Amino acid sequence: MNAARLKCIGRIGPAGALTAAGPPRSIRPSIIGSRVLIVHMLREQLHKLGLCEGGWLGVFGDVEAADCGEAALDDLIVELVAAVGRNGHILVPAFTGGAQFDREKTPAATGRFAERFRRWPGVVRSPHPTHSVAVLGPAAREIVRDHDVYLPFRPETPLGQLAAKDGKVLLLGGDHRANVLIHVGRLSVERDRPVEWINVETVLEFGGRRRRRYVAAPCDGSYAFLGEELEMAGLARQMDSPWGRMAYMSARRIVDWAAGVERNSPRRFLCGRADCRWCADLEKRLPPPPIS
Image 1 (spheres, rainbow, N blue to C red):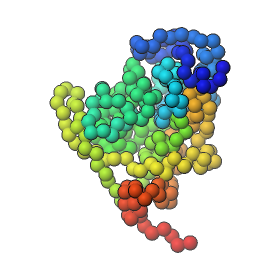
Image 2 (image 1 turned 90 degrees about the vertical axis):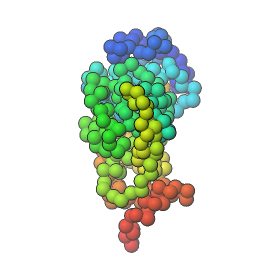
Image 3 (image 1 turned 45 degrees about the vertical axis):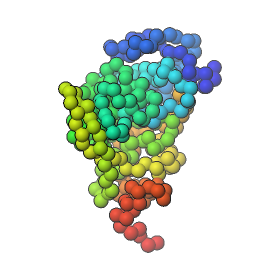
Image 4 (image 1 turned 90 degrees about the horizontal axis):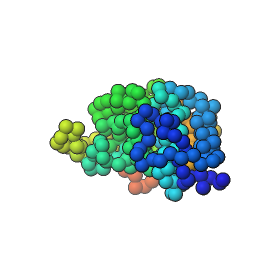
């Protein structure tokens, strides 16, 4: 059975493989021959690479195949839940960046996987109006608490906690522009940076609305070219799966690497686009490069 077929065929197993809440009602579990064995290879791969039951796993990016339907996304979520176990945690960016934010209703703009995960039973979404994170696990509510009080990538935020817990990262699709831990590492270095604001009207939990402005994320244009460098440095491990390319990483090592580059060679993160005001402004603020 080829990979393209595997991307879009049925679901994999009984609801008991999930958390106590079970799968969304739209799911009707079924077992289709070798599909079960092939899909279960993902959790085995993750365990061999160092993910432990009870650990923290950040899942960034999105599946590559345009024909990957909800059933295949459900398969992937089931596998990831099984890989971390009942005491583990999964964190998925559910960023929006729009002018309005309803924590319960606003779709994630970070891809089909993120939106499917956001709606999964037991998942709790953080209250940050532009850079929310969806979390599944026993301490989910504590992890997302007060996220809207902080700048989106500080150590106190869910993504900062992922690195502090020495969590692992599964990057779907292999595009490091979705690797938001690079932001966490860069912004841990004190520096004069451009600040761009996003005005957002938030629907409040107990009624009413609130309008505030929030800091936009740094430019991530240069991240698209980091894959080979991170692999050669031993920081990322490429994987193939029925859902397309993936890369496996240590959250703490990625944050430390990005902080080191930001501290010593910050121009490496400039995207080089003539129309990028954020990078142009940052370059003006950086000290002159050393003369070779």
